[in-house]
Image (tube, rainbow, N blue to C red; front, top):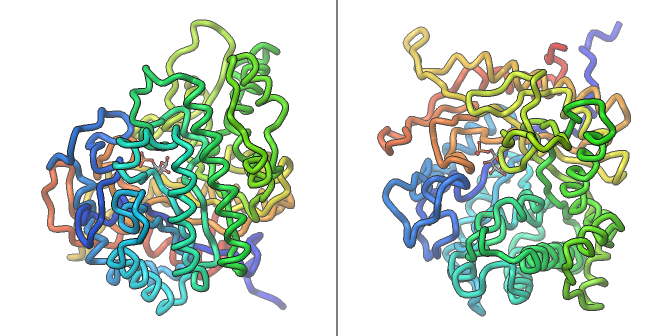
Length: 473
Ligand code: BGP
């Protein structure tokens, strides 16, 4: 009698974790790296930019992955990772962003990362641009408002595919491309202050990024023929605050604002509802015939981040949103994390079904996790964190991924966000910890940078070893 425990996860399901260069590497000016927008955002998305890097910006050193990557990747391998998502810092490769030739020291650093991953049999999943636009491009060209950025991005992508195309099977063009309108400086390197930014320029920047993403997909067919190119969006199921048709309409309109990016990446054209938005805003996008041809190069898969769901209402007294970047109103039926993010595992099943039904493209969950205040303790003389709350959060969300797979959704893999403690994006804190591995560094910059396995480290290793059979509904 077959005693192997059953699991909905397919045999080749990829299990791992995700990070981003600006949140993990540190060494912000080493190896020829130029400044990125992150180096002048000491308080993350929620704070002002500074004229130059300031010592209170934890990202300048982060957790020093730049020097400790071999130790950290060995820990990922000990958990049994079969995939690891990381970003390449654009300003390590092109320090100013508009040079003709790349920085060899930067390229060599990512060669070393790929060597370590290869040594452990871990598949690399590379984000080409993860909120890390070179600062020079922001300050000189106003970031993606300028059509010149398409050419700079193309040059960057050609270098990456030529150098790494044979070693990297999975590429993501832009991290959470749909956050652009909400976080223009962090997401699009747009230097003009948000309150002074004309909508015409903002939507033109969106168009430039979508064209650049399509161009990366088109180029990959020649330079990296064995690679799969994915888009990456921030997912956020939206529920009507009341069953009123007005709230249902508010949900449809909020959903459209998020889904248009995935629609363009998978269908290759702007949907009618988006053209209506442009008409009603009086925006006339500058779109060339070449742009239209480039947009027709659709992605191979859709990847996304999932943390929370939100509610939406048409009523004028709607309160401010709690979302990590997007708007919406708090959902009174859901508990929230210590940072106010709604905890909704069912929402992950809903968004997997919505994306699959809408786009019929394989899906990849490339961010999901719980940011929490962890306490380092000693258990049997060993330093650790008893993070049962994180195990419960991840277990409940992974159970819902299994439900979606049983619903017929094709899911390629799952990389938990912040598989090791790193600097948060929205607040630039280290105290908002996501990892299976605790890093001894605090918000005031103190700490030894030592790594300690949390209780969730062994739990996740068992999830991977059993391919999800140890999850409890
Ligand atoms: C997403 C970003 C990630 C990560 C995540 C968690 O928007 O793509 O880079 O930071 O948010 O958010 P935070 O780090 O603010 O907790």
